[in-house]
Length: 339
Image (cartoon, rainbow, N blue to C red; front, side, top):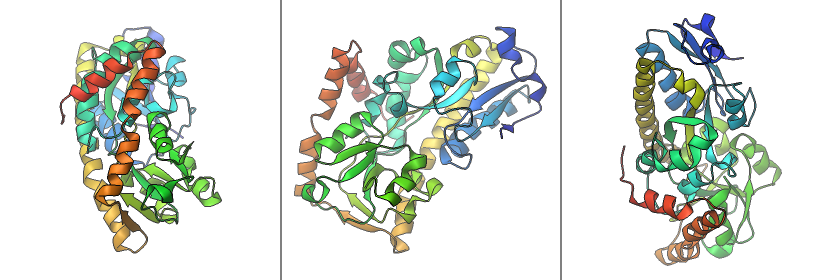
């Protein structure tokens, strides 16, 4: 069942039905991929929605639909106006958000906030990704999330070398992250986070490229007992986006409130992830449920050498398909750290 925020339920769909002019009270349908207790909602989407509701005195509120209640394809939900706002995970729509997959490349950032500081200048209104990818999809991106760099985690087998990793089935988000897994000699398997627990339990996958802050929402600490440190993959971009048509119909003061709330949520979310990432990992180590396997400097150099060409190959493939992969990669490399 959806959650209704604020006193504006009577205005549900008023904005969409009005075809532009905003009703005095408006409720926006907000589709969230993850469960309500997931940090990407609690520290991101909820922070945004509450801030907008407060700033507008309750005249703009949100009806929240969690865990893909309206459907898994968030872009289709927005396109059909079944939802006016959604959390859109770039890896789940590689054909439409291939350029946004630049965050999946290894070695370009060391924290969530650093990654967001690189992505946001490209994703915001007028940015390169907005021009080259989001405008055509009818999206206005209000803020973004990029988890910390992904790490290698396995169910039972300790991985201390490329030889240990070779042939293992490793869950990845797809795209460039799958290219990194493949370059290291493992077999990438794309599994959504909500299905990962069962996949490990059944032996469909042996482990994952994943993040510690994403482990508790799905109780993955019960099935992941080994981690390898010394190599970081890239990460998955999440867009918190509103339909451009809906955005265009909002009064300027509401747009300003949403823009400010987006920046508040974006900073809160990246800071939360950076703060919790090592804390969660350390808790499992202290509890005796997680073993840490550190790559030697020589071994880490082997891993980095094998993945060194992933970025150039990614950009070249996009260039060949008529999309500006090299241009986006250079812009992402040049973008400043921090928010």
